[in-house]
Structures are given as C-alpha cells and as structure tokens.
Image (cartoon, rainbow, N blue to C red):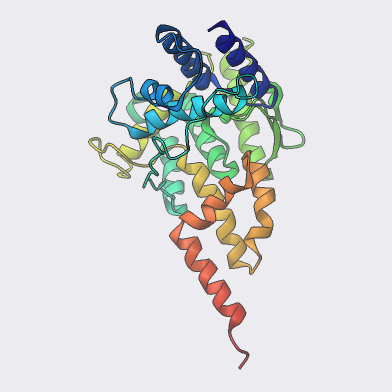
Length: 311
C-alpha cells in the first residue's frame, strides 16, 4: 500500500507542476488510499473505486461522480507503474448536468446595485459603502472572479498605468487586467479613502474591511445578499437569486453582445476574452455563446443576414 500512497504523492506533484491545485483531489485520494489499505486491496479496480466513491451518504449524484473522477484521473497515471490497475469507465457514476442559469444583470439593475451600495443602510460607514461600491463596479466591468478582486494587494493595483495583476488564479496562473480610465479614477478615489482610513497602518490587502483586514468572500456575499433584498432583486426567503459571480457572467455576455451589435465576429474575439477572463480553456468561454438565449438569437440573425439573397 506504500506504493499506492507514493504514487498519489508523485501524481499530485506532477499535476501541480502544471498549475493545478488539486486540494480536493488530494483529500479524496488520501481517503481512497486508506480505504484500499483497510480492504487490503493490492491493485485499483473499477469495482473498488465505485464502492469507495459511493460510501458517503449523499443525495448529490455529482458528489459521488466527483470522487470517482479523482480516482479515474489518478488511475490513468498509476497504470504506468502498475499495469494491473483498472481505470473506471467514464460512464460509471456520470456527472449530471446542471440546469442552473446565471442571472444576467441588465444595465439598469447594475446601476441600481451601484447606487444602492453607496446608501448607508443600517448605519453603515461611508468607507464601508465606498468599498462595496468599488468592488461591485470592478467586478461588473472586468469580469474578475470575486476572490481575485479580494486577493488584490496594494502592489497589484497600478494606479499609474491602469493595470491590475491577478496572481495565483483558479488555475495557478497570473495575468494582467487593464482597466478603463473611468474605472481607474474610481480605484484612485478608493485608494485615497483607504489610506486615510488606515491612518498610516500597513495592510497589504487593497480592499480592507472596517476592521482593517482583508475582506472575506463570506462577508461580501452576505452584504450583496442584503443589498439585492433591499433593492427587490430577490426576497429574503429565496434559496436562489442573483450572485456576485453573476457579474462576471454579465460582463462576458455584454462583450459578446456588443460584438454582434457592431457587426463583428464574436468568435474571433473569444481568444482575447478568454485570456482577459482567465479561462484555462477556450471551451469555457464558448459556453457564453451557446448557453445564453439572447446571444443564440443574435447568432441566428447574423447567419440569416449573411445568407440572404441581395435584393
């Protein structure tokens, strides 16, 4: 069994050298190794892998599918060292596709969110409100992931050239995000208010809470939930509703929509948009073209005009 554990360590080291983080996979594979040791199983088999994947009681089929996927990926690597390894077939515990659709904000809704974030609801301080306003606005115009915005340090925000440095992103890579002059002006205003609020205290985080610490995703999610309730975009009893991450989806959809409006070919712009958003593969950016009904209608109309016979 020490060979299996060693194989897992080597596999994780190899994948991480390629930029993958694999925190969840590591937990799964360590647990799988413990399971194999208890079963005194010398080799990975599809039957054992499925049995392990199904062991935690859960009504979420995708949870079991994710556990088996981790073992399947490792087994493809481990079979080179142990030819008796069985790689579980892809149709075993298949992942169920989600029917979830993000909330695509209208420009009017984004305007209400930004205006509402500046209102001092419940006695919120001016600095607190300015921070939320700046973050929501930044997410809406750059399509950054929420954690990318909150992980920005002061040195990552170039207020001279208007460039943000996003470090150690979801896929372990870094990228540069240029911002418009209007966005830069808001960031400069926030930096000035931030420095005044800190009064000489040194804090690495660019966005800071009223406790002079980095703002957490949980705190920002709660603030956004309260704001969208107050604005009537959801009720307090809704289990689903607009999310902060939907600002990222909205930005991507708006970029592609503008391409159609000026007669440009959106697919030619996808590589640049994919790089700007920090997608690991162009397929993730194609999702916006194929999953949004409005863009599909635009695409059909574009094709129709292309093939119409001249009058």
